[in-house]
Length: 119
Image (cartoon, rainbow, N blue to C red; front, side, top):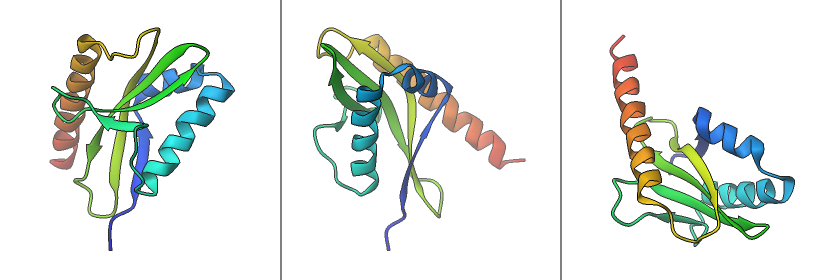
């Protein structure tokens, strides 16, 4: 039996989601629900030239919205998709500095998790 997938938001991702309008939130949570059901599509893709960073993609009101995330499959009871932060922009390309930011957040997350497990 496969472990269930759960999606969590780190503080910057939570701030981003809270600032979205209702239509954009509906699109994001639809994509999250599909991912939790193990249905992967163009709404959730791995970013090329990244260290395991994925993005939820949706557009609203002529803006391209992205919620960057990574997988954490280290728990025995569930697999997590961890949202790092989000961006809304006018072009369809995800900036390299945003990918690097997500990679830094991912590294800090796993360092903190490793430290917490030693206690």
